[in-house]
Length: 259
Image (cartoon, rainbow, N blue to C red; front, side, top):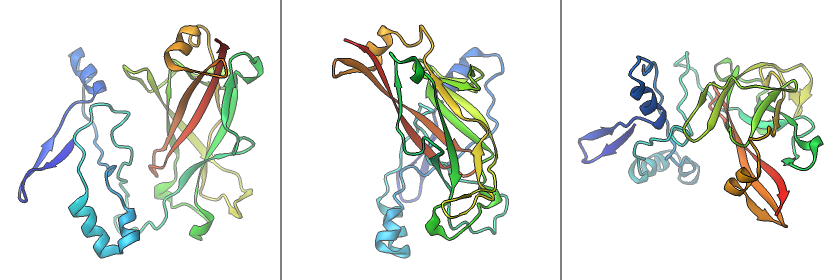
């Protein structure tokens, strides 16, 4: 849904169904039920406030920001959701962000099709605050007790304890699988110079693996490119904290067979 400002006095709402919504509506079996909605401000450039100050920055945002039209692809719409807080008097000064954590914190995720030891990768993600914020805990309203993960189901598979997890929340017509992952409280060890109290870690490590015939020569030819005489697929994992709205894109490189 998008807001189209046609005049200074009238705002027209442009509402369209997403591809997933059309799919559910076409079934005509009662599965198309709108239970909630969300607003986002993807088009707003808040750096104007930092650059021009609060008052002038707000004016530039109001006058110069183009408003996006409604987006039919649910995976592209609302990258930056507005957050609802149960305490309307609460002032949030810092929003937590997601970062890779543990032994693979700074290591790119790379899977080699020809090396069986690299079929399976594990990594962890932490919802945390910057050390420069001066805060040592995340407000309960913004604690990410759940994460949403999106991957291309034709290329990547989610693994847990060595077993493939196939209970995705949704699989759209573009083969993007959406998973909902619960979180658990992190331990009391220090990290980035302060206690982890109030921060949350994914319940388990997320493993990625090839499963034949999902990744075959046809798939490499369709999604990949040739680099140094080998097929290479560049894909990504998208993670979103369900309370904070923090978003993280993790690049994944898959090195395939030689040409």
